[in-house]
Image 1 (cartoon, protein in one colour):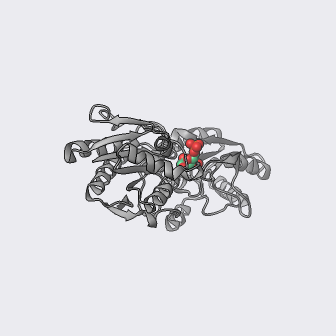
Image 2: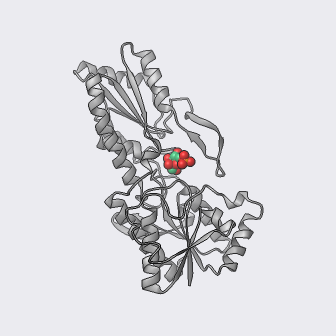
Image 3: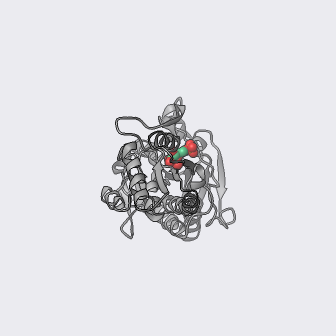
Length: 343
Ligand code: F6P
């Protein structure tokens, strides 16, 4: 059997750990061949492949990024895209494809699997907003990077008596903001699921001042928006899946706070792609490894049209149908709990 593997969408620490696990078990456990598909779905459209074997996947466990590369290619936006994919799969004798991706990439896997392609999904996104799994790999690493940034920002904010705003990723959901904010002791956390009011944030800062805390730390997800307003878009245009590029809510907020609260100085830090780069945490290495092994096991069992997922502490499989086109918002109970520490 020949198994293809691709990674699509934004990278997340742990992709290489998945690839390593798939290759190891495929070759040593099942005597399968594994072929790497370059740059997401684009590699399959353009026949860009690399051979994956024990040698080429050695030393991958701690390595960030993806040795396969990635792209946000949507084959359904290409002329005869799906047909080209089926043709290339046949020409290259690929029997099944392991698709490492978030909602967009797995959405394509779902559509193609309904057309007969043998796909297994592996849930990847630092945003952790994929339905069907408790955690995607990469999320924990992003949270720990953001938490580290918050610890550092605390000391300088306190010393200068400033309000420091940390903008983190999270287009439609505030998982990173909420977890990092909780772990890093943020005084306010802004998430896309709960539009904010600048006056309420000024109130939090005032309240802190009254009790002698002359600085504040705010974490904002890039997709957070003011009540009745819209997300702050960084640049016009959309990708092949219709996603806009967000960014700037931190600066918007900083300016609004300074306008409304005389004497307050704000500073803004946009964490950006630092959250996605570098080595995965130990947790993400183990999760990615478990996902990789489970994915190749599903291939072996012929259980196509599924993703591997974490439910509680168990790795399970979930139909792509239950994942595609859905989004997992933050646990709002956890958000309410975080509010105990606001102000
Ligand atoms: O989807 C994951 C994500 O990291 C989002 O949080 C973020 O908005 C986006 O990717 C950024 O993507 P790009 O790499 O295209 O800038």
